[in-house]
Length: 229
Image (cartoon, rainbow, N blue to C red; front, side, top):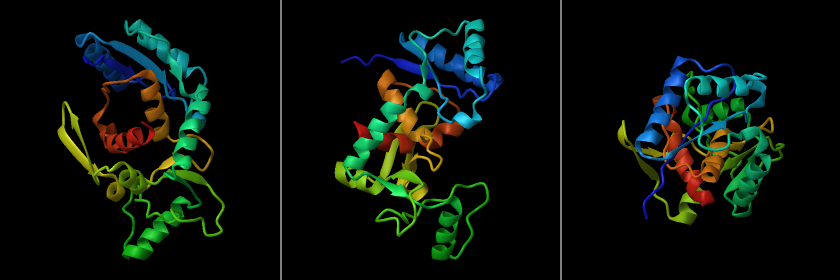
């Protein structure tokens, strides 16, 4: 079966698009056209406190002014709560997601206690699995994916491999690099990783053109894609 190319541009409406974002939009549009595929736009407004009112429509107008018009209906993440909840419920039913009561400080303290060293500044702490087997009387704050449980149940290797057309072959051990990552945040908002995986599946996205700074998200998204397949 010949794969149908479906690409997307997914800006966050925290303000108008800057030059770099427009370059990414154009690159994704050109790649879709070069492959005879379709190009979609998704407004990633799941992080509502950071969104600027009216920025979503302004972004769509910016794209249109540049001749970048999507080939289908625009999707807004803020309208997708039911889909995200259904995905989380599926993972919970399979015992692949669990509630977490840890604050960021709790995580850093646990790591420092175990390793006798400080978490490097500007680097996210790798979650040590503190709440994986219970909250220990702490109130639930967030929901996390049990990465190792998913890998074990599905027979997935510890190293997640993928190929990037620019960077070449890539791999990451999600357990070691990230740990069990958040699906729903402590403030009740949906985490980017869950939202993007659910929405890419719903829109049938086959190819993603994005900045190199986002490449590190890929392994987490692959694991979650397989968990929700």
